[in-house]
Length: 192
Image: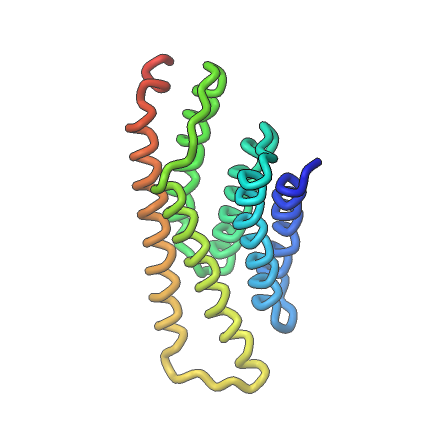
């Protein structure tokens, strides 16, 4: 197994640790979750670059890399729903987008066609990473209150609004990129 594929597997293996840190309250658990998510995000940055630069692109990597991204992002968003930090409608829309795009990719692959990610998919990924990191960072500030950090009155309401804005911006780009992807690849769908 080459280095990019190992990085992809590390990303997947970090997900349960991130989930545990988000869902099990212990001192600075949100900081731990943020650290796991950040480490996983770094592997996402590196695996594709290394694979392309060193000529290590594999079929496994083409399959596992986007799957690892979906597992990481959706696990974080589902934990946010569980913790009251994210609207479940946003997660449903993101899931719908991911199932639709993956279905088109599978249909195309069964016909020997590989559909590369486009710029809108990359924008979607970046906005999701920013949203998740932003929400986790705000929760770290909440955690720090138990260590003496004093936040201004009304901060909870401000944090809620910021969380919603971040999630809905990333959801907008997820849906937009999904629609563009489906339109660009409608020939795959019309063959059904």
